[in-house]
Image 1 (spheres, rainbow, N blue to C red):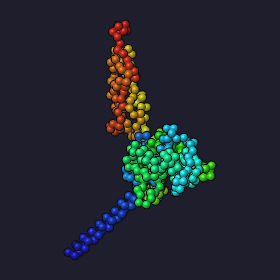
Image 2: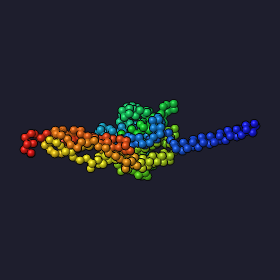
Image 3: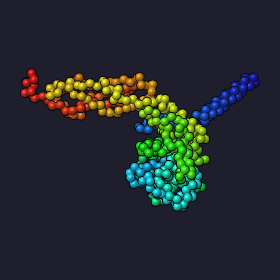
Length: 381
């Protein structure tokens, strides 16, 4: 009896050891796989999510906030309400901003383009503050504009409390943003060509080359096709980045928030982008269909045939391994009877992968064709 009891205790002890070891390995594995608070990979044109982790979680973005500061300034420039060569006079408040800076002095004058470069390349807090004051008259007014803009873009988990992403005063709420919201903002920024022209600069002179701006994004020049967008860090927020790269006709946006260190931030971003470029391609739908769409014969028309237009998505994002698994199902009549109206829908085409429809395209007539008159029909006969 005692021996059976000891044996049972021994077995239970072994099970506890195995369970503890398994849990420890699982925790270690999880920690190794996700050494950040949230992450997201999206295709830039459509916003399609390719990979995500805690993407809707509200986190502290640190200097990622300056993406909104830059976006508002770039929109003002695009709308001709702000000029690149317009002079900004540095206020006393702007000159007192700490953290990453270009050491602006009260009363100094800088062009808008110079301050934008300082913000987008070197993440200068004082430059962001000076530009915000210039645009809205005060930093407080600009913060209101940031939050209004975020709401209008559909950034549901974002709240701005300053223009540069610096830590708040003790007891105050910090800036908040989610990876999904950062993706929305990044896509809007990429619609403005000047964005990547500035965010891809590796080094740039400032204050007549007395100061050299160095891009905080260490992937610039290292990861092929990478040309933006913004990094962020302070201790409580962790290390974050919103990065974009383009290869051929595919542009991706990778977001990593709250990484444990800078090396992890860049490593995980590179992994996300590489994964995306290795697995996704654009399928040119219309090019694939062009040779398959023939003119349709017309009965009782003044013309014998009519050409067709393909209406629908011109390209579809697909997994690379599906490129040879595309099937096409046509629903096109062999003949049409006049009269025919230009733009008339006469059929459709289903594009499928493994018998699952991924898009439907309509076929419309290129022009109108009248019905042949009785007299002309007799003459032709």
